Length: 510
Image: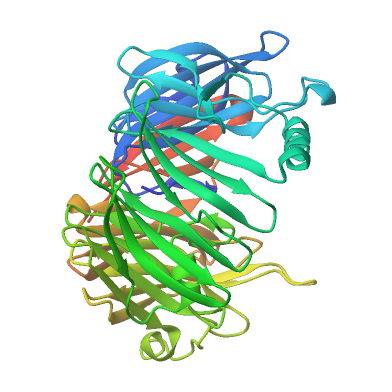
């Protein structure tokens, strides 16, 4: 489900021993990264571990990947030639079941500045254990496709755009992607700088033959225009928010486009309590410069959680629930005042609590009945003379009608120079329940020494349970927790100086 970026120190002392793996024994190269892999339903697929062997050519570098299943058994490995500007890769599983290695860090140290280029992603076919460079396509204004083998530099693209704008008065913009059901999908429009028009959504078959084209915003201008924001897509429909702007007047509708024909299956105005600013931003939910996964799809519906805005100020949360059978839209809001403040009296209308701290959203959880859990952390940004600080975690959970049932506060010591003590989470019991993890630097009641503790918090059938596990510094070994298979946590323990790099699964007690 979610990945961790936070490093904690020490070893678990009370969890039971489970499956282990020595990363240093899996390949002879330098270990440059590891991450969890998830399928398109957010289920844990396994892990990918990356190794580098250094420069192998003028523009290439030799790597090796090792794929582990969710029980830490190695199931595939292969050496490959990557771009010399790739320092490491981060893996993910696409909708076709392929493992994509996307460059996660860029390294320009081995090339001259004039040779700077962006490295290309690699594609692993798990069925054959083969790896190839990812193929990209451009869709051109004349209706043809162009295969892209080498990514253009930023300098080249800027010059091309400048020349095209000078010649035509606009830049033709397009993007191409593959579809799970087969074929390709493209978007296109003309960009005039201060406005755009002649937008199209286009579907193609496997041979890149156009099947249908949905046009909109054909006569868009600075004051009168139409935009589409895709909320969700399945094999039957593409669900979008269509916004029509006429000067300062905005109207929003839920547009459902038939994926087989490109025709409008439904186009209904979105009624309810959501403001224009709320609907404008409901698809994207950023927190601490990180985009959160703010939606979930079920068989009969999908749910989106956004911020609720009042005159550009964030005042709470908004839930949009779309019924797939009749395209009906249910919208509801909860505000910090009075909905959350009824349980957390110190919170004000903008989510600030006390002493300059505010509730920074860290994660959100969606249940099948429409109820939602929202996990926040009290956070105070850095000032001119002050370090960033975090304190308590706050869990807001609602009923199926998006009314606040309760607010649970997890008291925590103040942490300085960190943006969060929250780690990660996962669903349990087929998505019915949730477990989330955070750390706290606390004073031991017996030794009076401060140490890190890990807090494991389960919400099962709406009831909270917490387990505290001590984490302490030991022998200069660093431990990084990762999400494990359901009911487990994965710990990576390493000491770079001693070439020690092991991972193990530990079973949770819940």
